[in-house]
Length: 403
Image (cartoon, rainbow, N blue to C red):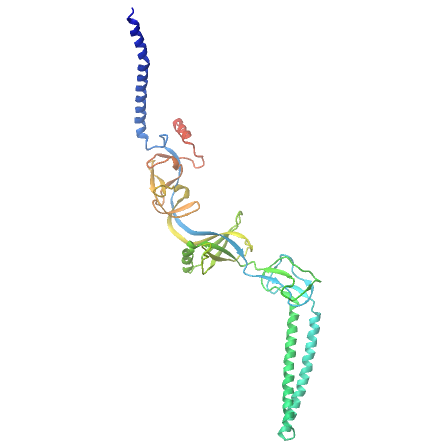
């Protein structure tokens, strides 16, 4: 009886070790079974089920090569209207913001002083013409006397000088008359260009002067055509030169930011002869007909210059192209329900579309949503593009609960 107690105690001490060994065996068996069961599912998604993705077909189309910039609308002509004579405004024929044509009457000035001066000039011309007629008669008489040896050479010389002097006086009088008639025309101030009037600065009754610092009556601004001035990085110069060298008009769009207005269409008509070394940019300008007056001088616009077109290239959604250590790639959806990782070469990326020169053929479907859970050879299933992307755990639950 005394020897049986130690043996019983030893057996009790061995029970925990036996239980631990049994648990370890069960864990090893289940872990091995899990590893073996997951082996055939390595080509599936992270949860072992087909990945829900959205695909879109690559299409073959032309893609314009567009250079973008920020520009400002400029007017080719802006004229500050001033009086060319000292006078007083009698009538105002233009209003604030009015569109006028070249030659339209803007203001009428007081012309009474000038008309009086013209009458005086005309009288002076008539008087001097009469004097010239008498001097011509005197010259003719002295010439006849000299021919008969009845006069002196001095008298003939004096008559000749008087005739020439009177003729010159007439020319001077006529020049003065012409100048005053020209001033009379200045009393009618007309528009020198087609354009839009700004705010009118004077009203009838105001005095105006002829000096350059005199009061501006109104400013006329040409509204059509207009031009847009912008700058591009110097790396874009070869593309601009090539576009101009083709001889065809280079299309330019000017879009007003934050509006739904249609972009204005113009053509590139100027590229500067030198590059700004400070900014590394080159200046350019485009002409716009602006018949609908959609552009306004001084306005800020977004400029797009179509310098070239890539013909018949495969186009995919930009979101389909993923960056990788070996370069960009896409997932191509295959007919057997798996995806293939394809390295691609980007010809041009512009907004939501990317043109590829290598890697994808037109008609092949590429994954545009769900790429993060894919790898080469993974299985996939199409999901409704309108449905939001599910989290990995939620996707697994959905797959397991699917009938």
